[in-house]
Image 1 (cartoon, rainbow, N blue to C red):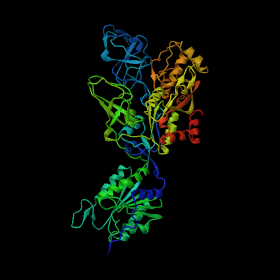
Image 2: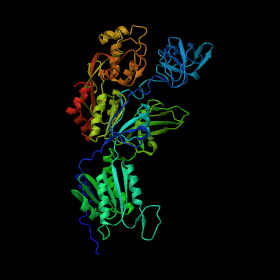
Image 3: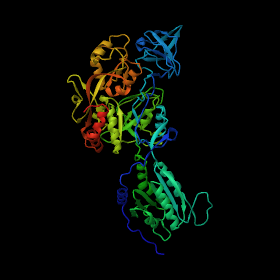
Image 4: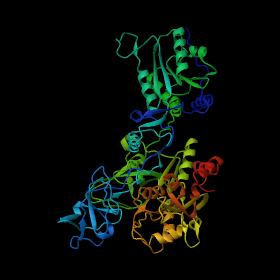
Length: 639
């Protein structure tokens, strides 16, 4: 018989255009809830907010003694400080009943609960015992060797986002938050048909004219790598009735159908003709693509289900699979496309290390105006789980180096062989719950974002250096009484965001604050000997409100700097502080009392050079969207 020729060979781009146009919008096939021990490699279907604080209590990072830092000021080897050791010691797994008062200390192990009254821990190596006293030979500052509750993960904080692929890092985070189940996208079922009289399964005895079915194994594992679930339909001989029957079962029970071989229109190749008889419209779209290898490729769609006949030769089959089929399966599985890894980046600011130790520094990557990568070191301490999950890679500081200056180049290594995750949009600055709303909605539009929280001032500096697309900020200018606008300089635009109501947060029922004006309550409270506050980090917009509110007062806890509103609320809710300044949203979420203080503006600094980038435009379109504004209002944010 004379071999028939291809009907219509088209270009690669035209083949893809026809295929994608017929498929329409590709969305995940469904959602299921599964146990955490089966979640590895799956794709999150919803954002995950932590139901608890991680850690759940203020904990010591070292073995030593819990102290009030002020008691150690001026201590040295030749001028030690003497503290009275309390009879009670912190026990692992228990909460100490005693209180550390001025001039006293309590023994504490690594990981133990920091007792009330203490604001730092002195390492045991820097102490010695003298009867019932502890001799301190090195001073500590407030917060030294202490990880505060909610520092790593705050209750209510969105830690993982929909469409994140769960690796061991993410499952560790979910376990740390106490979650036993997780909602994930269904894995699209992909039928794989092997056809031909010459095909035999691995393990069978080889005879002349036969070949082992390697395509099934290659394609099945490639489907798994894309997030799909392969369904092996076995080997079908060159029999039209048998082929039509197996195709019917495949089309009825799976999301994608793959065949290999039988596309060259030879006398013994039946796949294309069988498809013509069983497919619903639009049917066969392409038979023959100008590829080498891969010319015999056949692309079809039955209703909205992709059906593809890959070339029979394994190299051609896997090449065309990754070109045309893999992106479809990943989209149906809720997965993003892969990115090319990067290995060189510069530091945006000085990094210090300790002589004598090799240090591994986790980083998040962005790029500057020239396209060069910038590595932002991140870290919340050695006990953190979120730092590991958020990192794009790491670099090594040799043990003989103490300082890496700003601008130095470092070699970025991927985590566990992964490629660096590149986002469409990089946001550096102050974090906000409203930003979570916007970024979540952007993700639904296919726009990925990378958030690097360094505070308002740090974000503005990143914009000035051209290291991000925009910065969320609430910088207060005490001279003009305005937010953000006074800090605009040439080359930077300010885009109006939304308002946030800040105020004093306290535990409900506390007569020192309940029913009073914020200013009056704080002025009266700071005069009390037993009051404890929690401060915000320097460089944040909230810190300016603290300074204006406190004046010259420096109550206990002033030196403890929390890095977020969530951390402020956690400190007050758990009783290690009596008051702080935060936004009303976190107060409501924690069931705390709230005394309004001031409305602040949370706006966005944007480099003029990046303002017209598609992802930046998408962000501001989403910011102005009525649905977004409604969602922000629901979260308690102001127009």
